[in-house]
Amino acid sequence: MLRFLLPAVLAATLAGVTAGGALAHGARLPDAEIFATNNTAVITDAADPRLSDPLRAFERKVQRIVERGGGAPRGSQLLDGVFFSSDLQTTTFERSRDFDVDHVTRRELHDIAERVRVRFDQESVLTFDYPERPWDPVDGVEVEVPGLDAQRLRDGLLADAEARERLFGGSVTLDGRLVLIAGLEDLDLVKRFVTDIGGDFGAATVRPGQREFVG
Image 1: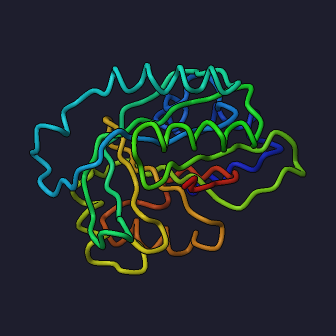
Image 2: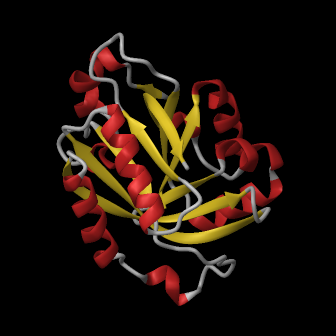
């Protein structure tokens, strides 16, 4: 059954989410997330040794940027990402990290992401801000789907022009959960794409929030 976590009941229903969805952020959701990498190369081979980098030094540097920007870093998780570059018109594998951030305003979140983008020479940095109040603006969703890997994600993006141009890519956790950030208007596209690459959208966890590609 699809789990759509509305802001007003998010905390109350978190315990009922699949174990993988709850464990991704510990006991509770952060105020916001920053998805970032230090990769600037185009990597098309899933066996490339650069994709084994745990990004520990990168993690420490980003957490310092978060602290200096007024936020409180709450850890991060390593991701295997596949992203589409509109400039290069190609997809690339890359290691990245999903940073949990607390005590940050939307303006601070944007500014932190911009500093990360500039520091690591990135085309853009993605943020996702969870609503704190029922009236907070929501324009996107974070979708987690178990049982998928980065190769299936890349194959799907290469075969689906609409998905790669509207979603720009996605990530997979080390325990095999696909993570997609999409606009609310693209939820049907996400459902179709997940199904096309062999995922079970009925097992997905969907969380509302506000997304921004900073850059």
